[in-house]
Image (cartoon, rainbow, N blue to C red; front, side):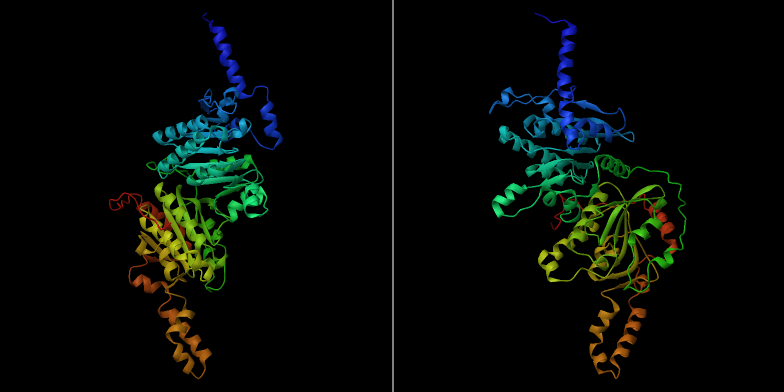
Length: 517
């Protein structure tokens, strides 16, 4: 018997009402946990009214362990596309109110469908994770689903931006999709990421640890380095995601978005003359310098709580997106260590993949010495930074502010690693090591034989600084393009960026690099 159109429409309405939780029972449970629902999150992140949902009616095919009788509305995930500031983005949002957001075969197929669409159309993809993990009842199909997602994460890497927002549990194999993406956002008290949870750890190792301590937002933003941004609540995290997207292009072919800032490109700030002490034993906050140089003092820092001796982030110069990589003299005197090298190298590679110029501020005494660093592989980790800068083909501008010693001088993008333009301030010290260390090695016997060793050492240090440890020796050899006044830094960088817009640098033909991971 054929049904009339009204009956058919009513069936569609009924199916949608179940999925959309019209009675609000599932929504209420989520709100009681202090969390938004999957669709509320999407609506808050995207431009108002822009979201178009697809695959709402997908249903699982599992027929074991009573699953054939189990209704899982929308397969526990919402997918679709919309816009952020008018730009196309693709999105998926796991629905913890439905079967704990657990991933099964069809749940995974929804994610891979949106990944494929994002890659084929060249638009960013945003994943909101809130899931209890693999759907155990579906066994190998769940594992297959994760593998398909990881494969696409990898294929999309460097082609489209991939952003992960953790807004609930993300455990076991599920953590590897966010880890393969470009940026991970977490919310304090809500986000939890770990391979094995507290119960398993206690059973295997007898260690007692809470979910928050093991895999909370602060843990991943301060200790593990897995997280890039931390927010106090969901509203704040969505604003941060929108801000990030304002700096980066939609794909690896597009240029980053331009924004008129109204800040005079030739602006000179005399405060810079006194901000960096000429005494290299005194510290200062590199962020103060960055904000005086970039457009309107706006600096969007990435991983601000991790490896704080290295500062990275996005800013604008004459309306153009630039990346900032800078030593932080306030922390470990700006030394490079394992974590700082990893942090900077990964950021450099992201920016190079997406056509974002690299602006590097140098003030470092070298690589951090010590047994812990050597045993931890500082050689290999430092090599990552060397590799990242060397393979980068975007415009590379380096400003040496003060100390630039030894291997760290090279690792912070000197001429040998392909810097297109290098500026140095008058107080810059570029040498194998600081004057004091060099004198103690070169003139050890002379100092020991002197009538007044202390006075002799001081004299030799002064002479070494004047003759060797200064920017002019490097400038004589063309290793520095220009020694500039501190207040000239902004206009010089802006000019360099302007002339380097048409830069072309082609790498040798190869399948891919072998970065020292």
